[in-house]
Image 1 (cartoon, one colour):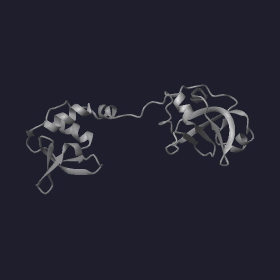
Image 2 (cartoon, one colour; image 1 turned 90 degrees about the vertical axis):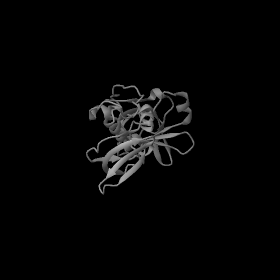
Image 3 (tube, one colour; image 1 turned 45 degrees about the vertical axis):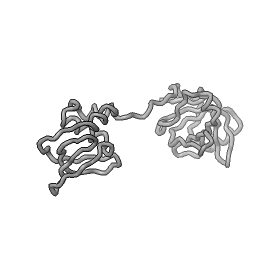
Length: 201
């Protein structure tokens, strides 16, 4: 969708009667208050408040502004706001399976109980606060809300499980199974297999 629209606007050549003043968004997030005046190859012409013309390269316009201009000059049919929202790139869906909660699972916020299981295979449930990449090592770490308990995800586990996508899991409840250990005084589980991590309702 983006590429054909960009190409069309790049080569569009139209001069129209002065349109109503609107707020236009640029690619860097700044806004421009003015009326769409016309399009030349690679350039969009706006008339701003003081009556002067301002030229803006197509490449500097935000996608929504490009779509609005395309509608004005008849390159595409007007779409409702909901459709535009749906067309925006959405975060990739989580790749983790959903499992029922283990009745014996420990809440990630109960650090004292987790500490009592040091060296033992345990199931932990908690809400993920963030997913961090550890520099250029290829390892990742999962941090939980209101807890110092962490999950270490080695590069090897990620390489063995190419379908395991961790980004976008923030705010979701997950269940992790593994042996409780300590690293740098923090309690953690080192994820050894993708099947040991799942979403829970």
